Length: 113
Length: 114
Image 1 (tube, rainbow over the protein chains, first blue to last red):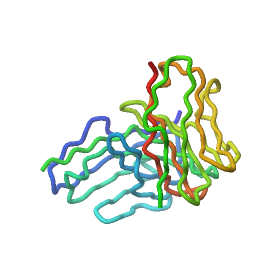
Image 2: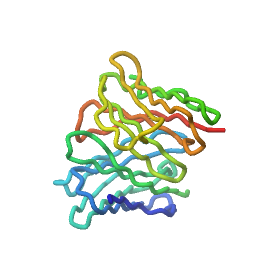
Image 3: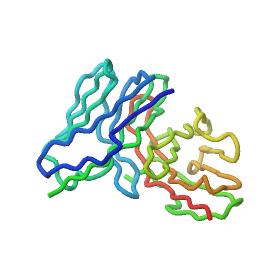
Image 4: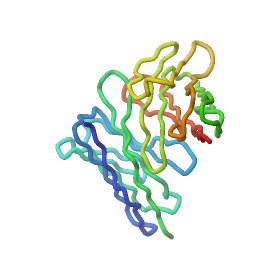
């Protein structure tokens, strides 16, 4: 069955460092992949989308890579700030004609001053 | 520009009662998705609707759960005869187009079953 794995343990890093979050998947061939941020008690907020024919996408301090051979996406936050502390969700999308997403369980990031 | 609005934010029901969760998509969005989230777990897809049509309900339990998105008014997720295991956060998302678009989420309804 389809499976998405994100780092289950919280990631603790120092302010100013680069945070790298991993999303691995099996038994699936997504047409695109999205990353969302979720704060406690709130709904997910869209961050970045990368398609299967793209290797890398950037947006300000955020960068995402997509390796369809390794079946992996990496999400980087450079020059991290305490305000970046949140849970980050990876979501896979199909090419089946509509925008159904399969979410990973998320990785909690804590950026310490 | 109002985002996706869900209400109520918190809903408490006793076992056997009915729960109705409402979702108003963003203006101009005609595609609505419902997800369920348990503590420390990811969002699980339940159902995808367009106006007056259910497109995919593969993630929704066959019994007690139903969803609609009428021509006028919000989308409704209805849970009949609730049980303790229905306690979760239910999120609604909307998008303007079918494929390859970000989904915009509401802040969810937290359902607690006594």
